[in-house]
Image (cartoon, rainbow, N blue to C red):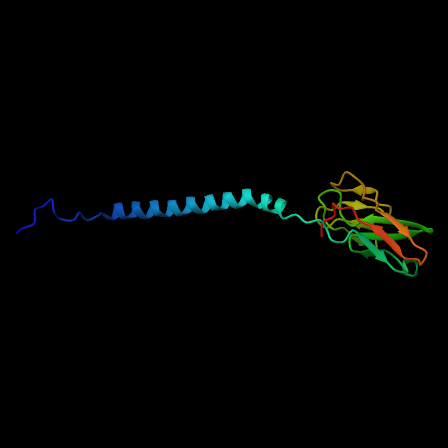
Length: 155
């Protein structure tokens, strides 16, 4: 039996092979972009669902009056100016970056966007619009400083 011309397998041309490979690549690219879009949408939802309040809501500094200079501990800066205790949050009011104390200029400086604050937490310059948050504190009979952290401070 001789095969008929219509029974022969049709061979693809190089142009058709290129087109098939191109379509396959585009299919994979679309799947990858779709997966990325789903991840971008689900990330904030997962962060919201798994949110946990900070375990530490107070900071205790034993014998703090014996310490000299600026004290930075677990989310707060403590400074004593003329027997007046100043307790400030270590978070910038612009976007929440952890600020640093610069002893040379005697200012708090945000390393993220350059906001500057004085020793009392007042805004000097930068994109921050508000002063640093003052934190509640108390001094007990033993001379320990207890600082109450707001729940909005993330570590």
